[in-house]
Amino acid sequence: MINLYNAHIDSLSIHRVGNKSRNENIFLSAQPFQLNDEITPLIKEYFLKSFREKEENYFQFSNEVDIEFNPLYEICNRIFDNPQGIHEESKKITTLLFEQSAHPHIKSGEVYVVFFDNVMLDNEKTNAIGIFKSELKHDFLQFQEKESILEMIIQQGINLNKLDKGALIFNRNREEGYKILSVDSNKYDTKYWLENFLGVDVLADENFNTKKYLKFCQNFAKDVVLPAEDKKEEVMFMNRSVDYFAKNDEFEETAFLNSVIDNPALVPEFQNYKTEKAPKYKIEDLTNFPISNTAVSAARKSIKNTINLDTNIQIKMDFINPESAEKFVEKGWDEERQMYYYLVYFNKENKS
Picture (cartoon, one colour):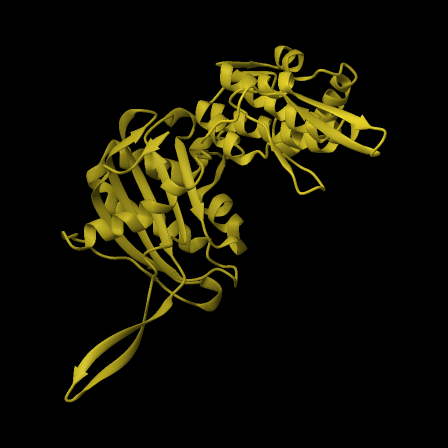
């Protein structure tokens, strides 16, 4: 879990990269940019806002042969070892990005290399390297008094409310390739940023594993439980799944299946579905792993727990107290009306 509100910009270097296929140049600033009290809060929010608003899906530097052959990994090592030398290293970072900017779709733009301190990661203070790129230019109006009229001037600039591309490399897990977050608002060139420039792969930590396994369970409920049972059992399966993850610190697949599957015939169906779908969710070998409470909380918000009926009535299940739906909701068939029904037991209606 990250907290970036008290992060401090210790150093900022700004350069520009063009597109090599269009014979555009690279511009490397001779000195770091000197921040002032007016620009600092605005540029800090521009850099970090997108990371506070997105899910924490971490990456790590990788290389097919060895991580030490990843040039950006080696540059980050030198920066963390000697933060005072970041400006010269920022030129090498920008040159690396320029070398990958050869596809006609790649846009030119400004590159910002930042050294942050006072960053909180997993409740511990650390520092981080930020690499950001602004690409899209927007028209905006300026007004100027000219004699007796107000003149309108069209200018171009970047939108400080939306970061185009960015990466935060946290000074953690150095031997494994650091912990990295990435933002890419322009999806047309994802390989260029993540693969070709950063050279990263997914960091399969507890947050990633928990999120991916719950997403896998959600699709199993939709693709297998719903056709085999009904909508209530689909919702209840996810209800019990979230409850298992919420009440346990460690995931163990056999205990999980015993806890969430009522119908024994669905156990082999689960295993078959996992064999078929596991590569998509990157859970091929996952049978035991630590559970992330953050990922469970996020799943509770995203997983639908409502039964929508064709009579314009909704029944909402409770992921906090899943046993309530088990005990107090029954499904049946009315012969006279030739309709299904849900029978709901309760003592009193809550006022709120």
